[in-house]
Image 1 (cartoon, rainbow, N blue to C red):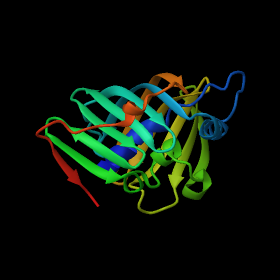
Image 2 (image 1 turned 90 degrees about the horizontal axis):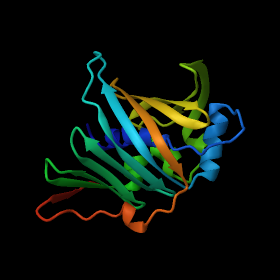
Image 3 (image 1 turned 180 degrees about the horizontal axis):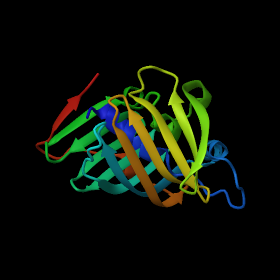
Image 4 (image 1 turned 30 degrees about the vertical axis):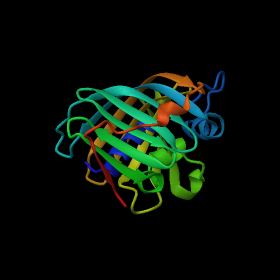
Length: 211
């Protein structure tokens, strides 16, 4: 999977860390807009599963995430293998220890109109996405975000909320694959050090800079 799809999926994970809206039984869209306005940073855990169009499941991934507006994030896969995607707000670095390689792209190239644009960006939600309320399912409130541009790399992302927190994200990519991300142990607006979003390639690791 190319870095754009990985980040779109991440970022799906990413879309994500919504602030508690105590005592407010709001729609999914209202909670999303509240999140954009009020949540500047968050940390949490994720479990991610991708299924092919033929229904074949890929190995489930688990790990930790953190983000800070605008444009800074860290998506740290722990199992079944280690992988790191981190952005300092200018560049997105993907580190694959097994390949001994780091791939670097600009934030604009990597995020674009992906779900990460909602999570980390400062642009207009309505300029980039069409939002549609979906029927409640599994006791959760749902909405669908569909990118207005044709080059987003995914068709849509469905977001589910429970108790005013994100519970699940389901992304359908351009290849017909579905990625489901469950989020948990979300901490809203924590103090994060600048080092959280910095990464230096280990000695002997190739760095590939993509245009």
